[in-house]
Image (cartoon, rainbow, N blue to C red; front, side, top):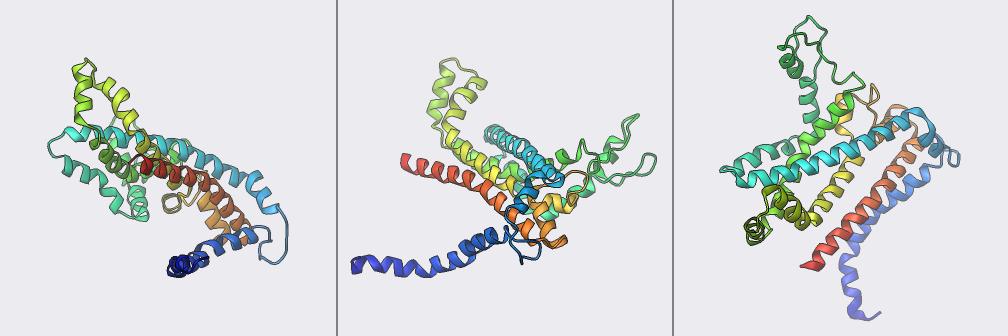
Length: 289
């Protein structure tokens, strides 16, 4: 290697060492621990992975994460796109978008606490302190609903909180892409007789497709590692467990380092393909510029 080629590596060497120590080493160590027993003393092979894919608590967590993956991603991206297009035409666009984006300024723990009060439940005939039940109780023959304890509603109630937080982020990113569409293109379609729905499906969505894909993959990554909302609002009770929350319990509640490490490895392996797709999308967009 020529002397001139060594200097760039010398400059970035400290950053690479820090990255290796704080990122690469923990990954390798976690992978190693996933093959050990509860106290990380004896090698037990694939037992921790067998637990992860066969035991009921983990199967419930996988099911819930899949539900989050579908419902959360579809609604955050689609609502973000619709709001980005609609609010581009309102007079006080900046103010309205700032209000919708505001939940992103709240920590996920804070949002969980807020919505736990909104969903609060008291038996029928007693004063309802939860905002949602208090409002619905004004309707005749309404029975209060335990939104977070009812297995039919609780997962969707938690997912709604996630959508409430992230839809503003999706809207802002997609709004920037929408504003990049040449106005002449949209006007030409309208002059040719296309209605607004046809313009949306035939012009806006195809042009914004790369940005929509990037936002969608970003939401998938976020939802695969969702933890804060579930931990604060239900802690995985009433069949609301997700993978990250289960990993936390195995590590800090049951002190089973092997199982926690195996779940962490599974979560990492699930996220890596999505990250690769996201990076490729970024590279494709850069190549087009």
